[in-house]
Image 1 (spheres, one colour):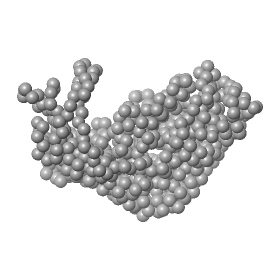
Image 2 (cartoon, helix red, strand yellow):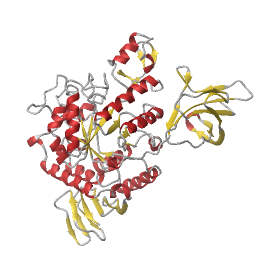
Image 3 (tube, one colour):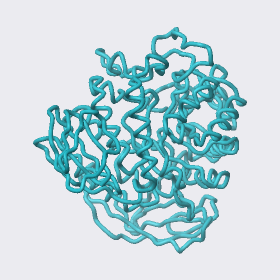
Image 4 (cartoon, rainbow, N blue to C red):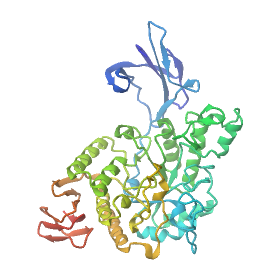
Length: 541
C-alpha cells in the first residue's frame, strides 16, 4: 500500500504497546522517516525503507514494538495483525557475550534411541524398519561416558528425550519429563553428574517451534475453543485444520505471539538448566519469531549465566546474522555445503572453497559476538561417509579441515568409527527417508580402530590449539586448482590438503614438524611435502 506516514509504537518494560495513526495509547509513538527507495523483485516494484531512532536504553530494558502506515490525504491504513491484534516485535537490551566454553567446544551429537542400549543388552530389531525403536537409552549413554570422554570431545548434544510417540522425539507430548522407554528423570540427573565429572558439557536439543498432536495442550484446544491453551495454536478451520511444521499434521505449530505459549516453553527450558544442562541446540529456530528467542535468552541466562543457545537456521547469512544478541550462534549450514562439495562430491575447486572461507569469515566478523558451530552431517541428511562413497580418505581429509577452522566442530555419533548407511535417504520412489542416516552405533569389533585413533589425534590437535582457532584468522598459503592442492596457516599450524585423486607434491616454505597426518605415506623433505591421493597433513608453521 502506498503510504506517506509510518509510526512505531514502543514500550521498554516488556508490555505490548498500543497506538494508531501516530497517537500512542500505551508507550511512546516514534514517527518514522523514509530513508531509501529500493527495488523489490518479488513485487516487481519499488518499496520505501523507513527508520526511527529509539532513545538509548539501559541494560535489562525489554523493548517491544508494533507499527502502522497510512495515507495522510486518503483513507488507506495498514498494520500487520495477528488474530485481530497488532503483531508484536521486540528485543531485550543486554551486554551478554558468548560464553568462552562454546567457542572451545568439540561437540558430539548423540541420537538417543540409536546410540547405546542398557548395559548388557543389544539393540533390538525395530517392529517398523528404520523408523521403529532400536532401544537406545539414557542408561546406555551413561555406560558409554568413558568412551565419549576418551574421544577428546568436551560437549555432548542429546537429541530430544521428552515423551514422544516417535523414535526421534522432535514431537514432544510433555516438555517436563523423560520418555519412559529412554529412561527417567533420575537417569538424566545421573547422566549430567557423570558427564560433568568427566569435563563434558551437556546440550539439550530443544524444539520450541512445534509439539506432538498428542500434547495435552493441543488436545484441549481441539476439544474446546474456550480452553486456556486454544490460542497457543493457530486453527485455520477448527478443529482439524491448523498450522503445522511443514504440513506434518502430527506436529502442530505453537503460536509464539501468545504469551502463555511463550511462558510454557521458556519455563521448561529454564527447568532443564536448573537441573544441570549447559545449553540448547534450537531445532528449526527460524520458526519462532525473534521476540521469542530474545525472551528465552534473557530467561535462560538469568537461570544459568554461562548457558548457551545456538540455532538451526537454514537460511541466508543476512537472516542468520539477525539472531545475534538473541542467540549465541547458528549452525553453519553454508560451510557444510562447501565442505561436502569439495571433499565428498569433488565438484568444487579449492579456489572456490578458499574464496568462500574468506568471504564467510569477513561477513560474520561484523558480528563478533556470534559463533558458527560447524559440521559435516547430522540426523537430517545423508552421512558424509555415504556421499563420499564410503571412501574414508575423504572423511579424514574433511575432518582435518573442519577441525582446523574457526567454528566449534560438531561430530555426528559413529563418524569416528566409520558408521555409514545401507541406502541413500532419497529412495527411488522420491521419498526422503531420513532414518537411513540414523542407524545404530557401531560397537566392539565393528568399529574402525584406525579411524578412531585418527579422530582422537584430531581432537587432541584441536585442544592443543586453544583459542588460536577463533582468535586469529586463517591465512591462505597455497591454492592450486590444477593439482587440487590447498594449504592455509592457522596460528602455529599449517594445513596442507591434496583433494585430488593423484599423488601431489607441495612446496611450503617454513613448514615444520608433522603434528597430524591422514595417511602414513605422507613424507617431508625440507619444504617439499609428498602427498598421496586424498590426503592431508597438519604441520607446525
